[in-house]
Length: 162
Ligand SMILES: [Zn+2]
Image 1 (cartoon, rainbow, N blue to C red):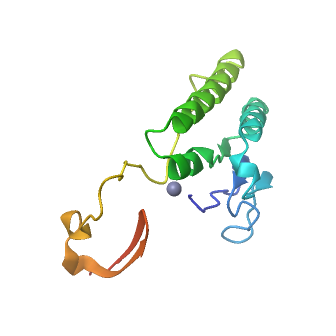
Image 2: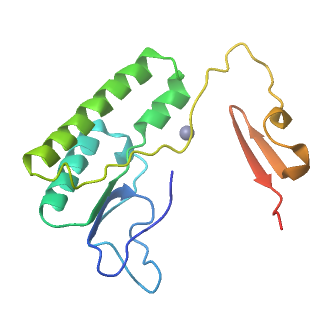
């Protein structure tokens, strides 16, 4: 999850279920609209659709930036696997709501002037059948200060380079 508040003075921003949108940024700037992050709400597909509809309404009403977070693709991927039927169904549902959002932009005459950016915090790969992977196959070991193994996750702290 990206934890940031990119509200700037003079930029009308609405943020839905985004971490720290309720924390003032750089001298006290807050987004005009903020639905704070919630561990359970960010997993609800119905709220994702509702939040996307709110975001498109905000853009129609003159907001410059609208951000919506949805965490269930990640959650389902972790719980059921990247090649699971459950994740495929989740992606189909997300695709539906993004299509609904783009159609709203089209209806409102905003499609050509709006940049839509979809981001993810990481990819996934099926690791069943593998018992180990050497991190040094991917990163120069001399650059690693510390690594923590958390099952299928690995957190790596790199040394600061000059
Ligand atoms: Zn994840």
